Image 1 (cartoon, rainbow, N blue to C red):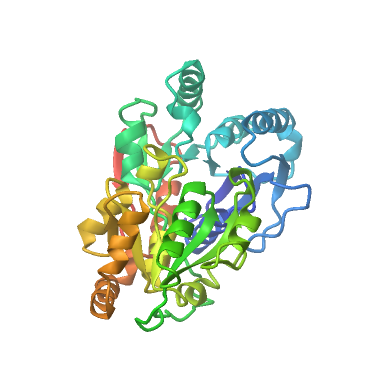
Image 2: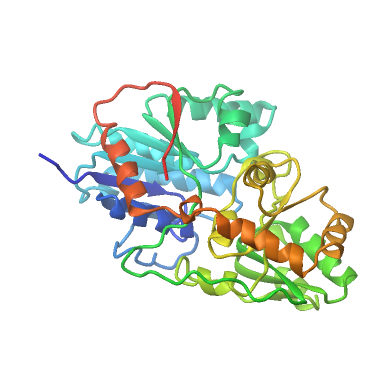
Length: 392
């Protein structure tokens, strides 16, 4: 007899839009979800997909030691914190610190639930070659020893971290950062504006890259208004000297604050010609390996992605013959790209994006059911190393 699986989802930041997306996918796949995690402020966490999250504590962005202390406190109180939570079939831990809590939760009462490790970014501390990095990787190997599955979003994470560092030995499920929109509230696919200047580049989502901000500012000043940059999302203020002041003094950068995801994606990408799919936050490491949300969002809604040569994003674009890849992370490279751009080349680039099936950029409910089915199969399973990709 079919039984609806119960998923306990442990997350490091309840306000992360990707958390809401994953919960929607689990719901669409037929799972019951209990959500528990940390907030990034003292304010009570908002409801997510009709769920009242179980709050585990408050953490601060960019303060690793404080986060470890918060996780330690949550670990000791977890039995009482989760005392009213029904027995889960599977526990998903989003990020390394949540893996420690997932292992603890799996031993509560008679739960004995399989643990899934969801790792969508490789933190720079894990890649250090000193004692700190080695200790963190040792901790990760220890915490992941009993996990049944690793969920990650880019094959480059496996190729450049999990395999060469021999961190994990478990099946790997590649879940790309595609858009998921509930069928009950569809939005129209919006094509960008006509190919007229000024060209507009959209940089949306988690705004954390100081180098991108400076590069785009210098570039737009160089072209004196022929290109404008629209910024939307949540700035990581800890990574900038003064984000708001800087943007306010740049004539061709415009910041319009946060947006609702996925409800407003069609509208915001419909206002731009290009999407900025470059990140220097951890250049040479995580930034080179990831496939960002904005890559899939922009292509779904008709904007042309701009990547950087030598990165996984650039390889992704080249394999599909879409978008543009800068030859280098310089103002000159950007100027060269836009000096050669005309109406015909832009329309051809947009047409190349539009020619790919929507399933390239968007999760379907069928995909979500397949995802939940794979989680259900973990119950009572043993670890077997291998890599699989959720079929679109």
